[in-house]
Length: 515
Image (cartoon, rainbow, N blue to C red; front, side, top):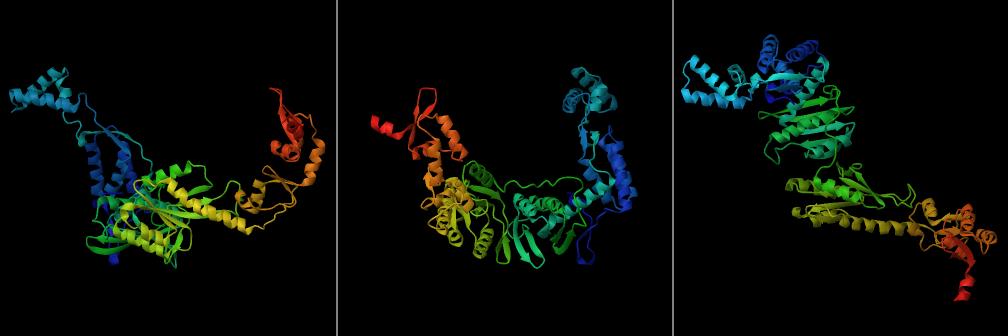
């Protein structure tokens, strides 16, 4: 962003139009000249560089454009103080020498510098050249490495000019081909926003500070930073209401006006607050059948939409990939102004019929109202307790398991001769718990595996008393039975262990006779 004194806008027709330069050949040549001036002054003082830029300003049609280019390029420059003696040390020594003898004439001054040099054991010329070397005008351009060529500098100038124009915006209305990235940036920048559904599509409305706060430079800067994310989308449009020294004007921009030259967006979403980040980290560390999704799809809320902070997807590890999935939306409602809280509550009132939980900062005092408008309010102070959220999810899980079980017939007859309960549950799209009270008339339950009686009969002929356990396990594995202990017990065998030499299959009757 540029400084406001460098803003170049046209107010023709009552509008507010930044004077963009990309594609203008004269502007490109001017950008090349300013760029070359910086490149040609490496090793010289800032004062010399500024004098050269002033010469360009005098010849240009608009001195603000020259200064705008220079402002951007200065961020690419490295200035440093170069002096044989530390300037503060040199000044202290010179002033102390002057006070001792008094300085009125030029010879007095030279004598004082000589005395200061003697005190520091350096030539007096070094003292003189170091006295004010740390002043900005005397600093040296040590390095200049611009990321932009003249064309890209013009593009960057337009982006910065538009951002500066947004400094006095009181409201932005944005449509974007990447609305998720846009909302993520808005929330990360902690701007007030709402999403409206219009005939032209969804529109993100970002509110300025006037309604709730006094105007602040920080808030205006956030608007400007948001533009960078907006401009990285493939297609977008923005309408801003500008407070132009008390006169309301409209600024309109789209993807044909401003782009981001060769750089990645700097407003990648992480979390809106430490509360959200802390909760997400602790929840993801748990081994649950619920997975955490950051900023899921928008939800309809009357004429508006709501984008919750999170969603929990229930996908049992022993369940089917599609059939048993279920989503619970989750919002963390932290401290905001009374007006913003009221707007949140109105959205909850109009929210479409979905599973929706809200963690509510107890200081807001609206937990009971939130609970009546959603599936439940989880109070918190400081941090959101993961246990409280998990307990709420367990209630959904219990209902889901019960519903899945109720949808199944009382008797199940799998086609396979051998199938585990986990695999059968996956085929049916339910959790394994949903099979707990079902009957299997064509199979016997061996451990956690269903086996047809004829398979057990065949296994009884292959497994004999005295067989090594290792051999019996191979026979069972050929039939896809991995629970050897349960299978051998069903066949009337037990395993006798003989020291470290391995196990041997023995009939259960032998153990009963010994008892």
